[in-house]
Amino acid sequence: MLNRLLFPESITTFTLLLEMGVAAVIVIIAATLLAGLCDRLADERGLGRAFIGMLLLATVTSLPEVVAGATSGAIGAVDMAFGAVYGSCSFNIVIIVIMNLVLAGGGSVLSGARPTQLLSSSFGIVMITLSLLAIATVDKFQGHAHVQQGIEIGMCVAVIATYMFCMRLIHRFERREAVDLPLDKRIPPNAATIPRIVLVALVTIAAAWWLTKTGDVLAEHPIDALGGKPLGKTVVGLCFLAVATSLPEIAASIASVRMNNLDMALGNVFGSNMFNILVLPVAKLTAFMHGDKLMMSGPGFSPNLTLLSGLLPVLLTAVAIAGIVYRTQRKVLRLGFDSVLLLLIYVAGMAAIIVS
Image (tube, rainbow, N blue to C red):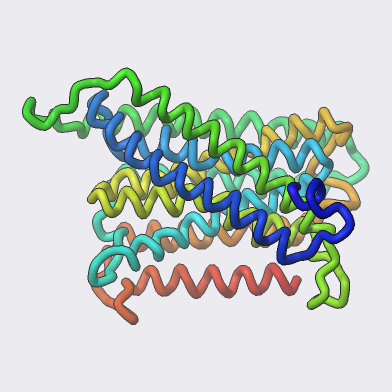
């Protein structure tokens, strides 16, 4: 983005990566501040931290994915939007491993997860699966544009309805399980808390837009190490944009763990995966406005590669759910066995997708 303004004739891979790095640093700082603000808001309003993590923290930290999806659809790069969404969902689960490394002595944060996290992670699988079913079905009805359009619209409605139902269910569950704080531990409401959250959200949106535009330039930029070939929008979306747009989740989750707020940290991870799938209806809208009537069909969309990238977060989330239920005490290299398994699956899955 800035490279085109400052060095229009001599854009290099290094300067593009450097520009993405600067935008990423801004996102990390904003997300760290956000975690503290959300923790304070939970105390001020008497809301459950798991619910705050899933609804507010996950929503704001997922804004980069929303901006990336909307921008990708608007520039006719829907395949990059899918890569960024599914890649971010996969990387979000790997954040659990990062949180375990932050904890003294390693172990597994999943062993301390509450039933609320089972709800959110399960609904995350449901929402991802709905999108994958839509991709497979659209591909089956090639040549029937009206049927394909109906499937895509139906998927958008289904994921929005599922998200709203899950949030309502989790809110009711949190209220049922809530324990009132003693009077001496309650924090008086501060009128500045919500405006500060809004400000941080706006900064996050701006940095995410910057990341996406730079990522689009990088996707088409010739790479010397690849013989002058570009990486392509799917790979850039899955690898670079997915990790970059997951930086808010990393920073916010680590900050939450350091505040001994595991509920909010895990709520952010699993809630972000649910909110990420809401990017697809946004991408559908912007793609339609761009003139692309279908977003899951066409010469620039690879159903098989997209399905493979979408199955990876489903598998990772299933392993995380198993870790919550089993609560393993076994450690490998100071990490819980479930964390090691998550890391191995992620690396193997990403390698399979990149070489496909």
